Length: 306
Image (cartoon, rainbow, N blue to C red; front, side, top):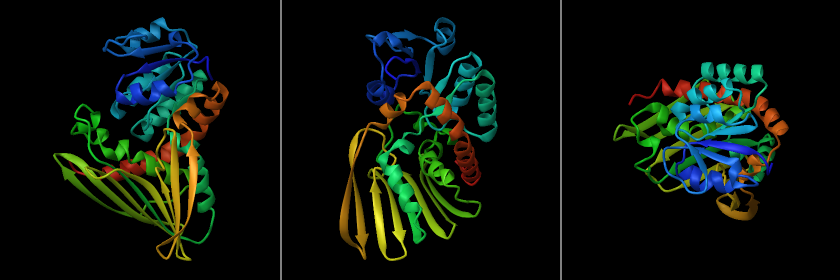
């Protein structure tokens, strides 16, 4: 939607390098930014309350603050009569989610979590594979090399940890397909008072799941699907949102038999291009999945001690 007016809250590297280049903004005056930094070419506000008073109701806010701030700021935006898109996770627990959902419904606003991988061609491929009944095991691996020293992830706070920032990806996927993870095994490691490794094992619908989330390791972002006939698929860069050529490999008995290439569009740009009507529909459809994955993350949180 090229003529949408957007106000972004926060101006970190992700906003500067990913969000702004992905926006379908017709003219620069349709984009406002809330930050204390000095930015050329864009009108800025020093805090969200000033923006809420000055901007017209046709603006959509984009909440790009750290996860522990998502609920408070999103609630303020909705209560002020503006629709909002928020970085994942939308909030940190079910009570927060239900309060936000009630406000959005009452005021007839949309509240969208920007979980972009659901809009990918690769997700459609995963869905087709999952519909096959001979799957034996699914391995999900998401690891990154390091943390930016200025990142919120450097805080010694479990709400700012990889559990919520990265864990929301695989658990949103698990929740979308209604897999039950009430019985699971968890292991984790702490480094410099931060969670650096989490592994969760569980079995649901006779499929074994192995989820690994890690930092301080080489970048990996894939899903490996093992079938009972010894064929397995590797879907690379599964949770990646920018425009990319994704190479997906099919093996049998550890011998590669095929490569499937998917030319993925910029998934952020795809979401920003949706009409308000489609964003309303997406907002309502996301609620159940977000609720389920927040329950999962909060269950795991109880087992982790920083």
